[in-house]
Image (cartoon, rainbow, N blue to C red; front, side):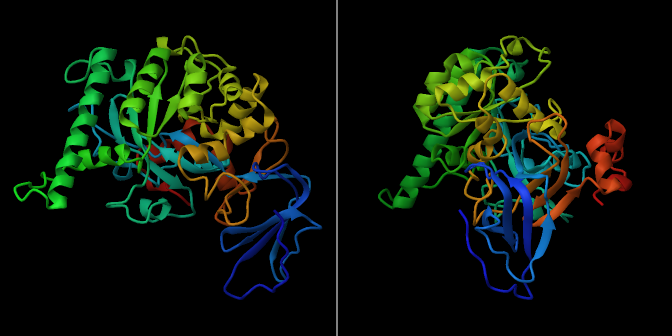
Length: 428
């Protein structure tokens, strides 16, 4: 992994060398007294002090006695007062979270204070399909949400996944389904409708039938077509084993790519999920309760999934778990049987895979984005604190800054100002 660097730093470039920390690349073994070189927001080299030569003129940051790991990735967040579909119906494939996130909302500081650098912001789970999610990179000082997007085209591009749900959340009075069977039937109808829509488009485009006309444009069916073609994946809220089995059948029928969110009883079908190549983003809560679907939650659920060969990540579902406590969630998973390596991967590289972003984030490797977290000690210790958060080579959180640190330790009143759109509560 090491890369030798001997050239001086060009005037227009920013080169940073993080030195002396225990570096946890995630994709490789920890490196004592490690060096990570970042050039213009990208990781250029990583290795021991003997292996990596720091470029002349580089900005050097001494991290002796500290731990450096990749920025944390959260596949399931509701920060920024996100909105999605409304009560007019249970299926809203054309609705975009991109159009319903307040990126100046102070709740997003919780993520930075917790070492999170990428979050998947999703509409709620009160619909069978509540809309398109949005992947946000928590860069410094955005003017608009476009400054945080992973996609280049926010109008026609794919900027996230699709949020779906089954079980009790989406079972309500008409026009919503009242049973699990009706829920599945409505989803199948939508996918078949999208198949027919795509077939009409193809016939019209082929020119084989002079009378074939393209259907009127339907943005919702276009989004479902992206699911059918594997261009967009589904993040699927589900808890009970029978709801998990329903998703397995629907995936077999329609071939979409899906990650199960929450996954409370996924441990009961772990082998089937591994065989189907379905990942699980587990919401591990230490005080479950609240709904009957959580009654069979097991603290060793992530461990059982890992042992079966399922790709497991851990999420916050913030506010269910505070974004500042994602590392604690990994510690709980390890305490209940998950391997240490699996627990750390579950908040970095595994969620990056679940969002389709593992080529850019999730590990400290040359060529990847320089999204980094500086910790005071072992990532799985309750005594460890997030000291700094870096996004693409820029420091976005510094615990020594009182204006930042208050978001790490403050309660609800710290965030109240932005909740009522008080400009004093916006990003500083």
